[in-house]
Each structure stands twice: as C-alpha cells, then as structure tokens.
Length: 393
Image (cartoon, rainbow, N blue to C red; front, side, top):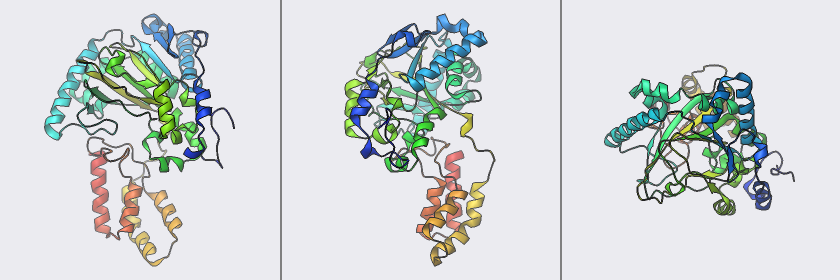
C-alpha cells in the first residue's frame, strides 16, 4: 500500500479505504519554512498578508514564485491558503453585499429563494450564479469586485491562465447548522456509486480541474461557522469514495480546524480537501460569503455539437433496436454515450436545482429513461426541449 491510498484493479472502493492510513497522512505538520511567503501558519493553514505581498503581484518573477508556493500548498501540502486583506479596499464588497441582499429578497418574493443541496431549509439563503447576476445588476460594482490581482493570481496558480469563473453567494443565519464533511465538484457532486465508476487516475487528476474559494463579506469569527478544514486530506486519493463513510466523517469532526476571517479575506482550497461549513452559533452574525468555483479551461470540449438534435435524430432507430433486440444493452449504452450529454453541468441552478440529490438528471439518463418507458419520439423530443429550457433558460 502506498502513502496516498490503494488502487484495486485500477479503481477506488469505499470498502478498501483505510482510516489508519488516512490518519497518518493528515497528522503531519506544516512548518513555516515550507511557506516562506506566508506571514504565519495557523492550525496548519498558511496565511498570506496581501497588504505586504501586493507589490509582488506587479513583478512577473515574484508573482510566479508566489503562485508556485500556493500551488505546492494546494497539491502537496495542507491543501488550503488564506489571503488576508485580499481586497485593498472593502468598499466594493459592501456595494456587492447590498446588491446581493436585494437579489435575495427579489428571489424570495418571486420563487421562494434558491434551493440548496447542502443546507436545511431556512438556515441560509443562496444565490445561484451570483457572478452573472451581479454583473447584470451593477456592472461597475462587478468590475471593481473582480478587478482583484490577488484573486486572479490564486486562480492562475492552480488552474493556469484562461480559467473560467463562477460564483454562488451563501448567507448563513444564526442557528444555521453545520454541514457534513464532504469533497466538492466534480466527483464530490456525484453519488457514491457513480463516483466509483470513474478510474483511479481520474480521482487523482480531477482536483486539478477546479479551485474552491470564498470571499468573506463580513467579519467571521469561528462561532459564525467558518469553514471546517482537515489539512492534508486532499492528498488521500481514494477520498472521493471515503468521505461518506461514518468513520472518516467522525475522524474529520475530531480533527478539523476552523480559522476566523475578516471582511475582505479570501480562502482558497483544493476541492479534494475534506471540508464542511461550520454551525453558526452566534447570536447576530449573518455570515455571507461569495463562494467561488473556478474551472480549468481544459474542461471544455474541442468542438461545438448539437447533441440535442443528435438525440432526436437517432432515437427512433435506437428505440427500434432496443425493442426488437437488435443491439445488446451494452451496445445501446455505448451509442447513447457517444451522442448525449452525460454530465449534469453546466446548468442554470435556478431553474435546474439539484433537489433530491447533488446533480440534476443528465441528457444521457433521460435518453435511457425514455427507452425504458417506451416513449414516442414526440414525448422524448418534448422532454429534451424541456430539459434544455431548464438548463439554459
């Protein structure tokens, strides 16, 4: 067994995950000498004072050295960084907060608020696609908010240039419950069974395709429920199959850390680190964070393809072959995989929220459902169009 988890015939299995191996991996300590640009190390997480480091971002060599350190921390060390004073001025944060509060109220009145796949109803407010909504509502505020060289450098450090920004606001009220330990998008948004169908090397490479971030929109002492993190846990490669296990979650609760944040700070972490929002046990702190989820440009296909029209075109043929046994089940599945979208994202989470699960139904799954229920081409076409309307508006 190696130091980061054992493959079994090229795949990871929840049953094969070893808690003692995991505990040994995450029990190490981050030394200050390992993060020379950090102003301090707190609870195994390096803190970077951007007021002091901002000049480094204007020098190409110094910027690259800082980004290299951040990337090393995210992949090979504790898995998270805090950028103190990521915003030189918090005026744009205050302006954005006012816009987000107004958006929350409008959406509550129009649709009852955004569904949330991580929190109990009433414990928080969520704005899906806060990126585009802020841009449309207040373009000047948007520009000042994202004209942030520190955040840009953190994104580029992990993903390289040409990254794709998305964001969702989370507002957790006093009394909001803690989340359970989990990992994030991509594999963290799949069920345990689906996650286990991806080969081990995809589990190892997937975290390099996204970066998780959070911008603090208010001062956040620990009692407001700041993010719980388990440093070094992103290096446990089978973690996407392990995080739902009760023993791993119990270990997380016993050993996780929380850091206070101030308005204008930014937290970035690997999507593979075991983490969870903490409980807001404060009396009067309404904890607002803009959750950044940044994607690699390399997650985009080479060609633009009208897969919906392709599905409609082949459906009568596939249905006939399915009904008369002209193709074996596995062969039908292969033909559908070459044709239909097999992934739930990207989507409009306002219209297509992951209610009842972590991800909406895929076009591939809809195709299989139509075959199983012997839909007509008209029924299937209408269902495809309705799904697209939910996804893309």
